[in-house]
Image (cartoon, rainbow, N blue to C red; front, side, top):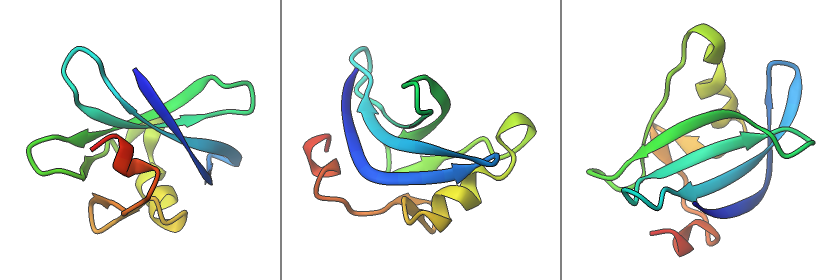
Length: 91
């Protein structure tokens, strides 16, 4: 995976996470990864390649509330990944 660390954090489940964008090598799909302070991936959301930038989020079970956390942090808006100069390197 190619990783791009954004200069943003997300508050989710009473913890702050760094926000990373990545592209999977095997299929070129994108993902948003939330990493804890130890660098461990704690949550992943997929970015649909059919509509560039459209984000599909599992917002239930252990991920309940992640969508609102990403909206609050200005990572996504209206179901799409927000424009970011760092993200352009992945598109």
